Amino acid sequence: GKAEVYRIRRDYDGYFAVLKKFMASEGTPAQSKVQYMNMLLQRSEPRFLQNFRPQLDTTINEMLELSPKDSSTLMLAGRYYYSTDRKDKAESYIKSNSEYYPESATARLYYIQYLWGEKDFDDMLKETAKAKADFPNVLDFVEIENAAFFNAKNYEGIVKNCLETIDK
Image 1 (cartoon, one colour):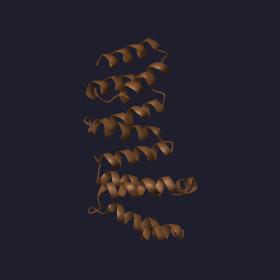
Image 2 (tube, rainbow, N blue to C red):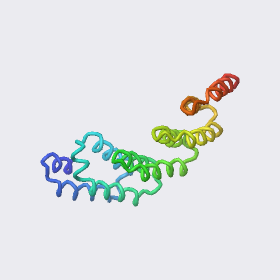
Image 3 (spheres, rainbow, N blue to C red):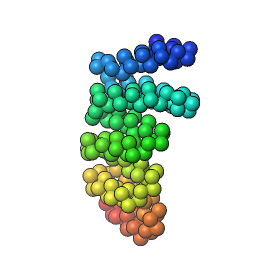
Image 4 (cartoon, one colour):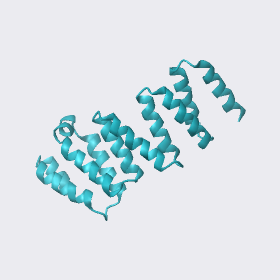
């Protein structure tokens, strides 16, 4: 509402003041805040993100302070820092999410996909093997493990993996 009016009018001081109040509100669910920030990050021009990076960093960090273990907030932080080319920070949030929610195949999958994007095939194989053991019915992990085997030129691993899957 009000924040968007400020942003459209390019009154960024007003925009960030309202945004700060919204993000600091303990009565607003983390999911709502994450939804708004995802929309903002997806729809904004790269120049906006670049010019207001300190304010956006502060916003993300304040969200994390209020909800340090909220899965959607951790994923938002990971995506944000990755998109602003701060991959170490991105990985720490994505990996933390996976560790805080070991029962979540989605959290594990997102971390493994991060490793894939970084071409860290050794860690990708380790994490995928653990995920397959924890989530034997999630075939996504078989496919991703095959991709890691392929990138590692371990074609025998692909065949073995497929045969094990067929035998289940």
